Length: 356
Image (cartoon, rainbow, N blue to C red):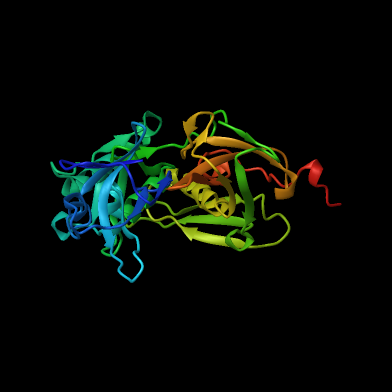
């Protein structure tokens, strides 16, 4: 793993490191541990607090992340201890900051999601750390469609505000390895990159969790009438994973027009489906010769996980961990329907799992 500090140097060795690549987030994160040597000039630059150095993380020439070093930790004791640095992708600043008062008013009328986003990014983008907006062609029409009116809260982070608007249009807010903000749509319908079955070499651990408390039998999405006389409305979706008990939920549409209410209801259901999580631990970073990354799909068949038939999962995040002895990976996977417009089907209602 290489850590390149802009305009300074390239570091190729650390005692420990972790990179978490995330799909549904404005930033991925990283942390590195090493024995800090105050006499080493490179160490003094790398560990100097408050400089927010811009770094690029690469593995064998492949760019994984562009971001800032945010935090430093120093340790001293009778036995030499590791010190650490950590940070996140360039767009991560949007998760920590509110809309500056210089960009008020907080209400935007007749602007597209792209226009609102570009206006906000311009405040944080500089020649030293440019943050650009990239738009996947699959969602360009929605990004360029107009919001009649949208209003941010004074206490909302920019990431929270943009995520709420993007969700109304069924758009995912993500980021690129180059450190740009990305509006996109998940590749949840593409061919799986691997099929996990019991007893495979390289798989050290697998687990599946179902969080029933996070789910509701139905979700009703309400849209309030506008002050200009626009109609109130609602949309209803049911959850196939809660078929036997009544657990209704009612939510409010925060922005968007009448045509966005259905998408907002579907997104509310998708958020609940994140309560089904598959975790896979690997003793390597690679599947079929490539570093495993988010925004890919896999097939899983394992009766001990109550997965009796080949079932498709979407890789939402990947932890790449390394030390002097080994490199390991941890995959967090969710159902594809979390990120698609497809109607979810209960994967646990199968013949092999007959409980009658």
